Length: 331
Image: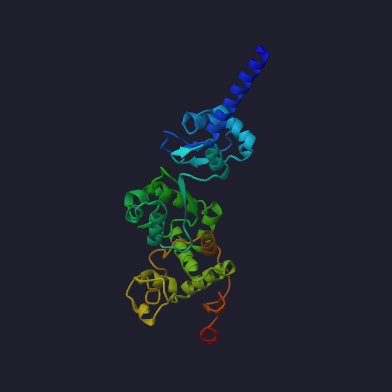
């Protein structure tokens, strides 16, 4: 009888332990943590459990390890900076870590060809950083000096890329990253190309912004750059539409003939040479095209109606290409 009672007591205790464990694993509890919790890359399960217990995300690290192994989620836990909801069960925590969700950062994509103002508003939309703050910083002489930028603003100096912005990052840090990422493109070989072309970094970025504004086709970028360099060598007006898009207040849109008469140093239909600064923030491929333009004798190009351009060596060829484009549009 005594043995039977002992076995019953042990079974009861075991059942209570199972129930308590099930409760702890599956029933949500409140935690005190209000700031993000970082799980560094390569952290083993035992250390993850210790971090979570220390931060009060889970009540018991050993129970968390057992639950992770029994659920098979322990093999899929991801690093990151997590902002955990206020009420969670251990299974909720395991699901969050295995999916990599609830991250305390925003992915901000700066697309090729956006102007500084467009980037500022996109960053504001994704992060809450005030666009006015970003624009002010981008024109702050002290900040520009700190970054080694001699231009009057960061227009053209922000590399289009997807940036992961942490919860504790600042607009200053984000801009610094975008500038430094672009600077990495300017290797010793790139600077040698600049010397060969007899162009400054600012002039390369201006040219790259024109290329970026003209074509999205990778194979056309060096050819477009070659056209503009050819026109510069001959003293011809660049007549680059991206420079007009930059100065119209309601762009980008289809250009009108009246737009070409806007009196601005950026108007390359009116003023010779390169415009005073970049007209957008060019991507890597356009910068490389500006550094290594295609060698040819083309002086003109026009859209071909199929996403690309027709390149011409003289006015007669160009006029035929324009007529063909207009005919294609009418169809």
